Image (cartoon, rainbow, N blue to C red; front, side, top):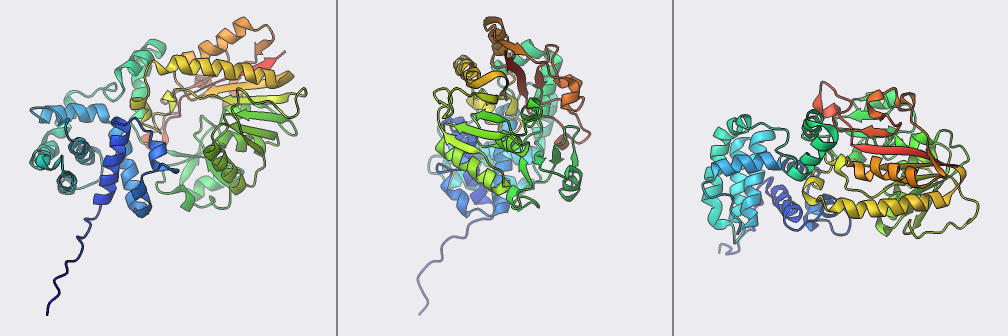
Length: 450
């Protein structure tokens, strides 16, 4: 007698990746959750464990593309929808964004992009009634989407208005547009190598930047790349690798790295011969820092503590150097972390500058006379950089700036301010291949306790 049991439905290839992408988009856009917390650690999306590496890479690229092009996607979809994007079914909104992003910017056949987006809404109770709408709109997008982009092509469309207004005021309209254009491209993979940069660039199909960073356009899990498990290099944007180099000779010197996790700068300091005390308030991030140092065979004292409140065990001796990579708005990293643009607000900056001021004061208390402090942030906002350091210099007689010379940063004069501070922009370091161009936006100042 034939069996009456039914086989479970077969999962359509690629649907799981798009379903998780929709969940994560909803987390960013409606629940104000960062990409990092949804992709890694204890709070990561539970479905990620079951995804194959290829699907995981597709999901990440899909989410990043949507967040990087959110303004343009909104414009295109608004022109294709008579009544706007449905607001009563978040999955319908996500399905439209996912389908349109694949059609307009990704190497996915249009019919597959449409079909999988329709399946997404059909599998959601609240969104199922929009399946026909999603199908029709995405088919129109395949025909009419590119002309709609061309008619309104604007560097500012994918940057929140409050942020674009700031950049125009601080850097001028042309530079602000250049920053926005640079952010629209997928970032490269930047690596700080222990030794043999040229050889590693060859092995990883990349190139050596003037600053010594190895840059490659390779995609996929970094853990699978040559040299990772042997601890030959670590991932670090070329701009982020500059501040730790501003101390000069560190052999045998005691250096505190405040807000240190995940540990790229700690690794640089240790590699340069410093005796490093790395401090971060997050136990999970300190655990990750220790893991990274272990893989790299580098030593440092890693402590879980609030840097503002922390007291050094060797009180009275002071540190030869203190590095403060302060918590900030992170607007310089939108190229790598496109969720930042949609999670931050103008009002966040005042609260962050108050914390940054306390960290600076703490750093000077930890320094011995004649010690060097390097203060840096991955923010493009002058309140978190130039203005903060300027106010400190004006109010503290025992502090002086040591200007950074272009020769210290590979002769890149454009990234040194007239006052002698470091200021990198996403549009710096252009390249014929957009995937190999640009830097994170970083600010750094070098100060001496006199």
